[in-house]
Image (cartoon, rainbow, N blue to C red; front, top):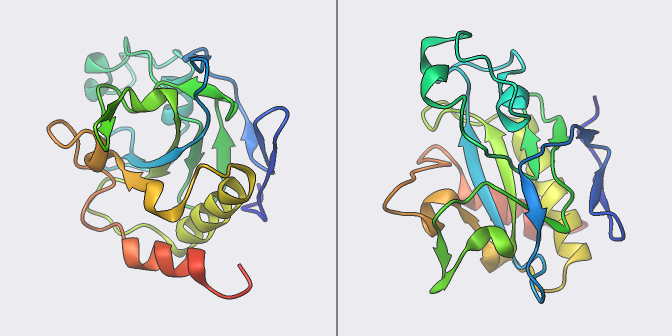
Length: 191
């Protein structure tokens, strides 16, 4: 799998060269809602472990509750994200960008509720305590640059963490996420 360079196909909402794996956990965006926000998340399954394909199974409703004791509490959830960036920087897309992925839950950005309606959800394979990899930052910056180029309503100040839109419920991507590195990468010359 490759980690970029990334492009967005505007007519289909497909990110290239992301691996495509469709999630049923998606819906159409409400009328008048487009991509105006990007939300960065962290996920690891089982908690604190990386690899193994468990995230794919969660987002496709095929997670076996017997696969790990922690899965019993989450196997029934209907959740997804637009993209996952794994520890190697490879991207998987579960939901086209012109559709809503079910990633933010009860959320609000600048007093506007229902962030799923107007955001892109990007999961980083991580656990909020382990630093994210160089490959993940490179891929995330590449994906965000492609989104910024494609969606005029999206701007760097509209790239936030899950903790920013659901502060009473969520802490991801966590204190180990380097926001300065992300913003520096987005504003670097030649990017």
